[in-house]
Structure formats: structure tokens, C-alpha cells
Amino acid sequence: MTSHTPPPQERGRRRRATLLTAAVELLTQGGFAAVTHRAVAHRAHLPLAATTYYFTSRDQLLAEAFAQLVQTELTTLHTWITDHGLTALADQIATADRHRQLGLWELYVHAGRDPVLQQIARRWTDGCVHLIAQTLAHPPDHPRVRLLYTTVSALWLEQLVEQRPVHETRTLLTIAIENASPPT
Amino acid sequence: MTSHTPPPQERGRRRRATLLTAAVELLTQGGFAAVTHRAVAHRAHLPLAATTYYFTSRDQLLAEAFAQLVQTELTTLHTWITDHGLTALADQIATADRHRQLGLWELYVHAGRDPVLQQIARRWTDGCVHLIAQTLAHPPDHPRVRLLYTTVSALWLEQLVEQRPVHETRTLLTIAIENASPPT
DNA sequence: ACTAAACTGGTACGAGCGTCCCACTCCTCC
DNA sequence: GGAGGAGTGGGACGCTCGTACCAGTTTAGT
Image 1 (spheres, protein in one colour):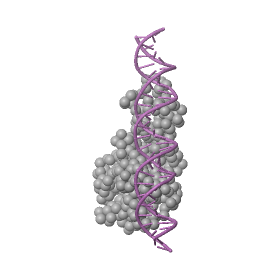
Image 2 (cartoon, each protein chain N blue to C red):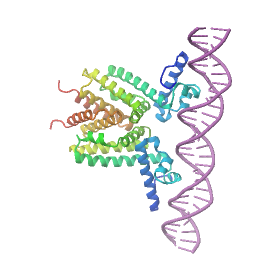
Image 3 (cartoon, protein in one colour):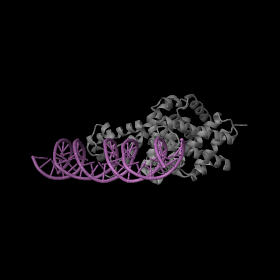
Image 4 (cartoon, rainbow over the protein chains, first blue to last red):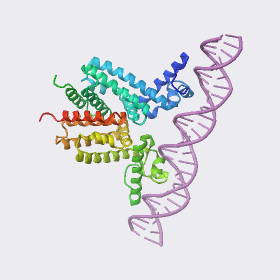
């Protein structure tokens, strides 16, 4: 199994999914280095060899975990924004599972060194931009939308890493959204 | 030597510095995981045991390397901005050593999991904000300055990781700077 | 000149890693 | 119901890692 062809049997597919979930969980808890074959297998309650049976290499496992993480994160963000609006994002950032987010960013930065991951990283950015454009009812390729996303993501990362008081982030976020909504 | 007291002898201090430089270089080339005792020692042309003699642990070595990296990066940025101005930053980002920058960001994200590194990360942000405030002749605690820094850093990271066309980054950067300079 | 501390460098240890191997069992399809 | 592929799981290999050890050498202070 060199490429990614899903296992033909039902149980195999389930096992593969279990491993992937375990990998994502480990990634979001201990970051990057925590995703080892043994740790994944142990967490999934499967023997070690299952990891190499369903994934050709650790890199492939990580890439798929990243893709899945991005996917779920996008849908989570989508429902949150439609429910609470953009400005309340600061609270979402403060509330959300820190380690999960850190794992996501860790992989994002790592994507700079790996073309496969880079593609997934772009998909993430595009997804977020699309999401914001939808919320603001702007065309998705509008530079201001693009800029707003960039700013929001940076605020997010900064809050995540440096853990400054939340109200600062909220203030900055408000200004950023104002900037993105030019005189109508 | 549990804490960080500089070696009393001249040669010792030189060796310690050599090791630190080697660690920074490795960090900027292979990222994070590349900074092992053996790799550092080999690069510094010193025996393995020198690393554990001058640094209590790998964590300490990494922390000091991060601090040094932040320091030099800040001064580099300072001279570049005073020479070429803020808008030309996009070119700087495109020109600069990608791996070096990636290493820096890698550690930045990792700082979210480590209080010691977190402090250094804050110092970095504060330094950059101070720098931008100086350039724009604004008070350093002005929210717009703070926001501009955040946006710039995000553009920087995005360009670094996703490697999109540079002119996009330049466009966004220009808008961001406009936003930060309100109607005077 | 002598002593104590700083320093040196080769080596060893135990652990964890990715990956591979292989005898075995189960399932599916003819 | 038998063959063959899919799946299973225990173990092993070769490697690198952080760290510790220690006999020896250099240096600084008296």
C-alpha cells in the first residue's frame, strides 16, 4: 500500500479511522513530537504494526492528521461565526482548547518545510478567507477580506502563544473589523 | 552548574558562545528537531560532552538559542526598516533566509507550551511593536500600532509558509499601513 | 610550586524511535 | 469448502537520542 487507497474491508477502514483520530488527539495534546507510531497505536488500543500497515510512513500519517484537523477546525469555526458573529471571535479563541490550536499552528509552520503540508495549509487559509467573505457578504478575493483574515489569524496565534489579557485582543479585533468594512 | 552563570574562564566562555551559535544555525536550518547535543557539538567542532557541560539540558540550550535568535532578528529588522521603510518589508520577507525565519516561528509557536519560552516570545512582540511605533512616530502603546505589527507578522508568516506570489503580500501590506495611519 | 577548581574528551547506558518481518487468523468470493 | 488476499500482532533490528561518568589536563589563585 504505497498510496492512499482505503482498505477494502469494513473493519480495516474503521481501524484506519481510529488511528487517524488518535493521531489528531496526540497532535493536539503534546504537539508534533508526540505523534509516534507507538503512541498512536497505544491510544487507539491497537498493536504497533497496525500503524505501519495502514500508513506507509509517519509523514503520511501526519499529513492526513493535519488535513483532518483543518477540516474539523473549519467547520467548527463556521458554526461559531454564524452563531455568534465575527467580533465574538476573541472569546472563542480564549475559550477553545489551547493545546488543540497550538498543535494546528505547529503543523502550519512545519508546512513551510514540506510541500505536501503546504498545500493543506493553503487550503486552510482559503477556507477561512471564504468563511469571512461569506459573513461580511464580500467577494472572497477582496483584499480587505484577505487582510482581515490575516489579522484575525495573527491575533489568534498571538493570544494563543503569549496569553495576554483577552480584552486587548478583543479591542484589536474590533478595530480590524472596522478597517475591513470601508465607508459604505 | 544548574543555573546560567557564565564560565569564569575566557576559553570556556568562548566555547559556550560557539555552541550557542551552532545551535542557532542548526535551528534555522533544520528547525527544532535538528538541535541535538551531538549535532551542536559536531557543528561547533567540540566533543559531545561540552554541550552537557555548558548547558544543563537541551531545553536550556534551546531557550538561550531562541533568545539569541530573537535578539539578532530584532536588530536586523531595525536596520532594515530604518534603511528602506515599512512598505519595502515585503521584499525583505521574500529575500530573507526562509529556513531561518521558519525556525524562529517554529520556536515561537512552541513557546505556547513552555513558560520560559513564552517570556522570550513576548519580548519579541514587544520589540517589534516598539520598532514600528518608532518608525511611525506613534506612542508604542497605541492600538493601531499594535494592530499593524500583528498584521505584518501574520503576513510575514503566511508568506513564509504558503509562498504565495509576493505582490499579493505587498498589496496587503500597503493597505495595512494605510489603516494604521488614520486621518491626521 | 602547589592545590583546588575549571575544563576536556572519550565512552557508556538505557530508552525511544521508525520500520520491517513473519507466522498466524479471518474474511470474501468463486 | 477451499483458495487467496486482507488483516493481525508479537517481536526484532538498527539507529539516534539525552544524559551521565570519570580519568586526565589545564588554569588561576596563593
